[in-house]
Image (cartoon, rainbow, N blue to C red; front, side):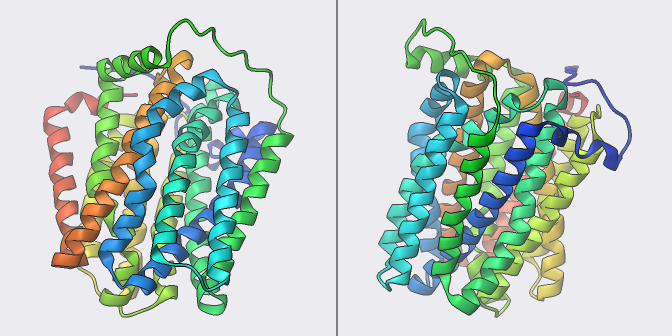
Length: 416
C-alpha cells in the first residue's frame, strides 16, 4: 500500500483554515490582481463562444476555436516548463500577461469596427494559446514563491477559489454586457483587467531568484522531468486522471452556447447563467478545500470527486428545464473542482523544487492539451448526434474510468 504524507494535518472543517495564505503580502497582491484578470478572462471566453455561434451557427466551429487555442500547448508547454526553471517567474508572467492584453484589445477593435470574422477569432485563439503555453505552468509554479511550503496547499486551494469566483462573476457579467452593449465591451474589459495583475506583479517584494547552473541542454532537462513524472506512481496517476477529465469531461462547457439556444431555448444571458452556475459549484468546492486546512485524506477526497463529477454530469445531460439544469451544474462544478484541485495540490506538494517547472509543465500540457481534443471531438459529435447525447457519452466514459481507478488503483485512496 502506497502512503505519502504531503503536509502536517490540521484537523476539522473550519473557516479559520480557509484564508491562511492571505497573511503573506505577496500572495495578497497575487490574489487580488489575478481575481480581476480572471473575471475579464471569463467575460471574454463566454462572449467569444456566443459570438462564434452567432457568426457560424455551428457547434463544430466552437470546437475548432478551442482546438486552435490548444495547439500551442502541445508544441510549446513542455519547453515552457524548462524555461520556468531557468528564468525569473515574475518576469515571464509580466510578458505573458502583457501579450494577452494586446490580443484582447485586438479582438475588441475588430468587433467594434464590425470587421470580426470567424477566422479572426481562430487566429487570435491560436496566438493566445502561445502565450498560455508559458503562462499557465508559470502561474502554477509561481505560487510556491509566494508562501511557505507548509501553507502551499492552502494557497493552491485559494487559487482555485479565486479562479472559480471569477467563473461565477465573469460569465454572468458577460451575459448581461453582451445583451446590453455587445461583445466588444466584454473583450475591452478583459484587456483592461490584465493591467491589475501586471501591477500586482510589479509591486511584489520577492527575494532574488538565482537560476540554477545550466549543466545540460534543454532537451536533456526536459527528459529528466519526464523520467521523474513517469516513474513516480502518484504523479503519473494524477496526470492520467486530469487527462481523462479533459478528454471526456469538458466538452459540455464548449457546448454551452448550443445548450442555451437548442436545449434551453434561451440566448446570451442563458449562456452566461450556465457558465456561472458551474463556476458557483466549483467555488463551493474550492472553499471546501480551503476550509479543510491540512487534512490527511486527500486520496479519498480525490476518489470521491472522480465519481461525483460524472454522475452529476449525467443528471445535467438529462435536464431541459433551466432552474434544474443550473442546480445540476452547481454539483458538476463542485465535483470537477475537487478532482482538479486535489490533483494539482498533490502534485505541487510532492514535486521537488528543482523539477517544479518541468513537472508542472508536463501536468499542464496534459491538462490544457486534452481540452482542445475533447472540445473538437465534442463539437463534432454534437453536430452529428446532438449536444445531450455527446455530454452523456463522455460522462459515462468518466464514470467507468472512476470505477477502474477504484478497483485497480486502490492505493490512491491512502495518499495523504
